[in-house]
Image (tube, rainbow, N blue to C red; front, side, top):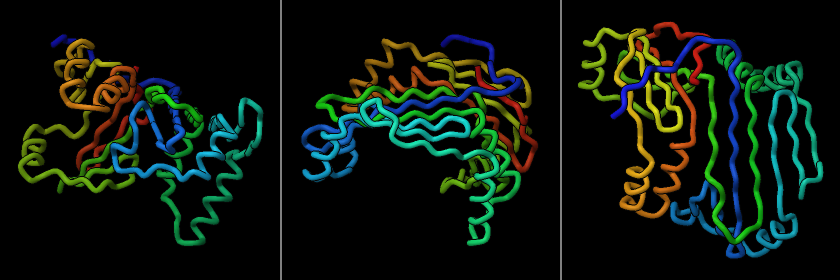
Length: 246
C-alpha cells in the first residue's frame, strides 16, 4: 500500500471525456471495451444486420458541447445543434408530458453537458475492441439518505445499505466525504480530513485478472486507465459545487 495525498479539490471548470470502442464481428458478436457481450448473455446480431454493419464499416458518434455529430467511414453524415435554448424547449415539452425534472437536476445536467465530450466508435472487425477510456475530472454527486438509499446525480439507484453499515457511518459523524480514483490511485477525504490512500500495482492486477477469468483483465485495464471521483453527502448535507478529481 502506498500512502498518497487526496486529490479531490474544489476548482474551476472540469474537463470530462469518455471514449468507447465497439466492434461487431462476422458472427454478429458485439465487443465493448474488450469484453464480448455474448459472455454476458447478449445475443449476436442477425445476418442482415451484420451485413449492414459490414457495409457501413465504421460509424462514429461525437457529443460535445452544443453539438452532436455522426460520421460514416470518416465522412460527416449528421449534425444536430442542441444549444441551451433548444434543450430547454425539449425539457419543457417533457414536463408537459409528465416527465419534468427538478431545476437543480437540470442545472447539474447542464453542467455535465457543457464540460463533457462523449465519443463512441462502432466498427466491423474480427477483433476485440479497445478498452473504454473514462476521464471525469468533475466529481459525481452521490447522496446517501439516513435510511441507506443511494442516489447518483440526484437519480435514485436500486441500492440500499443495510442498517449495520448505516449505524457505523452515522457513528463516525461524517456528513460529507470525497473519493478520487486516478488511474490506480484511490484517495479519500472524510469530513475534509485525508484518509490513507491505496494504489493498485499493475503486475498484481494482471495476475488477479487472469485468476478471475475471461473479461476480468480488460475490466482491470479500464480501472487502471480511468479517472473519476465522487462527492458523497449523507442525510442532505451540502455538496461542494465545484469538486473535481485530478
